[in-house]
Amino acid sequence: MNSIEQRLSELQHRITIAAAKAGRHTDEICLLGVSKTYDATHVEKAWRAGLTDFGESYLQEAQIKIAALQHLAIHWHFIGRIQSNKTRIIAEQFDWVHSLYQMKHAQRLNEQRPADKPPLKVCLQVNISQDPKKGGLHPADVHAMIAAFRQWPGLSLQGLMVLPAFTQDALEQRRAFARLRALRDDERNAEYPLETLSMGMSADFEQAIAEGATIIRIGTALFGERCTKSAGA
Ligand SMILES: *Cc1c(COP(=O)(O)O)cnc(C)c1O
Image 1 (cartoon, rainbow, N blue to C red):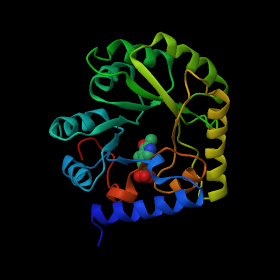
Image 2 (cartoon, rainbow, N blue to C red):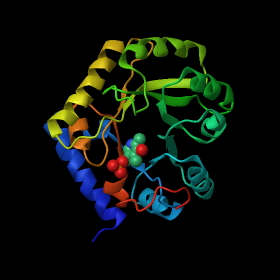
Image 3 (cartoon, rainbow, N blue to C red):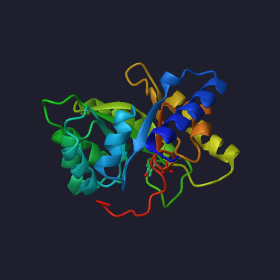
Image 4 (cartoon, rainbow, N blue to C red):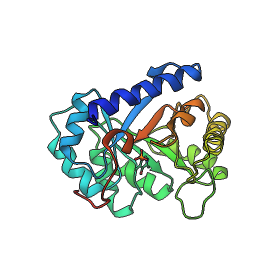
C-alpha cells in the first residue's frame, strides 16, 4: 500500500488540487524529493517513478548517493545548514543551494564553483518569523544581499526560501508564506526576478502552493517517516 510510487501519485493529486484552488498550473510547481536519511535505492525508485530533483541536508550522506547515482540525470539541491569548511563539496557536486544566507558562504561558493559547470542556482534563506534559533537572513537584510550578487558570476540567484516556525495552524502557516511572497514582490527587479519561492514541506505544502510556492520540499510524505537523522542511514 505504501510504495514510493503510490505516495508520489497521491502527492501529485494533492498538488493538482491545491494548484487548481489557487488558479495555478501544476507545472509551475516543482516537487523536490527530500531524500535525507534515505539511501540511494530509495532515490533511484523515486527517480524511476518520475522525480528528477532531490534535496539533501547532510553532505557526507549526500556525497555517497551522488556518486552512486551518477548514471541518472538528477538535479541535486543542498537544503541543509552550510559550514564554511564544506562549501567546496556543495560548489562542485550540487546544482542548487536553498539555504544560503551568509556573504562569506556566497563568496566561497562563487570561487569554488567549477568553471566548466553552469552557475550554481541559489535561493536566499529568509528567517521570516525572525526566530533566533533559526538560520536565515533578517527580511531587512535581503535587499543588500541581492545587490551583492553582481560580484558572484559563479552563482545564479533564483529566489527565496523559508523554513517557517513550526505551527499546525493552517492560517498561520499561510501567513508566513504570504510574508515571503510579499518580500519577494518588493525585492524583485529586472535583473533578479526571483521567480523561485522554495516553501512548503509535507505538513504545509498546500498552504505554500496557495501563496505561490514554485518548489515544495517533500520528505516524509514521499519516502515515509524518517527513523534516524544520522548520516549514511
Ligand atoms: C527535512 C526537510 C524538509 C522535508 O521535510 P518533511 O516534513 O519531511 O517533508 C524540507 N526542507 C528542509 C530544509 C528540510 O530540512
